[in-house]
Image (tube, rainbow, N blue to C red; front, side):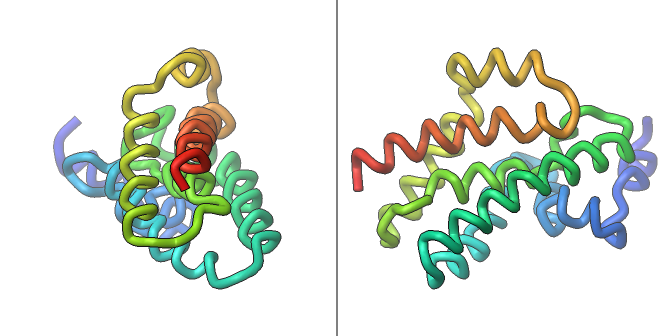
Length: 157
């Protein structure tokens, strides 16, 4: 596959791919997951201005919709969990920051912890990542990474 063929895989005009690709952040040539997590920060900064219940419901919606969004995008791209699909990172970061008091320090630590758990994939995240397929598989390992990071954040903050 040539680089032109790879560029033609992506269609940001498609609402599904636009969301799955983290508003285009997943197209970063290096570390697309990190850029996808960065794309979650503005959404997080909006959500912290609402009630805890609203934040929780929005995060659940991001996760549930992500199963469809990531699965459909993977089908369109013909690659399960293509690195450019970063909607799962957005969901994982929102989970990481749930009920964490906002500060620059908590934002940075949450970002670093989520990326750590998402990249290292300690058990059972690594097991889930290998065993589950489709949109649910794409989403679930990042949901777990977000939960691992959330637990640490709750102890720190």
